[in-house]
Image (cartoon, rainbow, N blue to C red):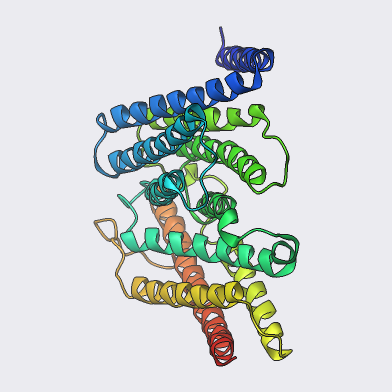
Length: 390
């Protein structure tokens, strides 16, 4: 059987199993179906956590770290789901936000954020791993982009339409942060082609899990009257996909030519975190200039984004002054080709030229971030001062 046919067979078998499970839930009473569904989600998430922990013992270094973080995230998620199952079996009403399940899911989110940053610390040609500052910058970029989008959404749509506290939206907000971080990893990191499978599988698991979380949050907020049990499949598939990624072979350093579409030199890598930040800054400045008093949420969001932007600028400044590890030995070559050059000389010259261009583009990105970040900090600083003066 070919690899494609085997993959189709496994997908078909998974669809049959899931369809049979959903038909079983439809055939039993509602109360029993909810209990069975909660127990299944808890069991599968626990199994995935144990699997990630077991595969972590078979690796070392940062490969072990991201698998350990995945195991912690899944274990915390299973704990939260187990508490919900206990509430259901005891006949207790759903706890108010915040609650013990919310604390468990908060630990899950923090572990996933750190795990994704560690996944992005993959090996590349001539560089064993990325520095810690690159991971910090990735987390700050994802928080800036997602936080700006969420604050913008609250100022334009959610704040006026919602009758619930902002705490009721923290689960969808956390999911937006995770999806934003996966997107930034793909658009701003050079990942070898053979290693993209890890990121693709983890990203797919987070997306399907996010859909289930958002559906459940809509049910708790009263947006939908009944929680569809079919939505819980996302929890199961998401946990199994993360365990599958942990079971894959460790990342291997790849040649530069093997790197796929994500390139750090594209304008997308710079615009992705900047665009939502610029939009929310304009909205906040417009409200202040028009004399409108900012709400508590808007003022708090402005302060948080101001602090994140300042931290991001500080990290970028420190990282630009930190010398990068260069592959040894260093080679000096003339700028112009010679008829006597060998094939190796021509390849080395082309590689050095590409490195020179990449360094120039990196300098341009740093300069652009410094300028725009300074402008944003200035505007947000005035917004914060105006908000507290009012």
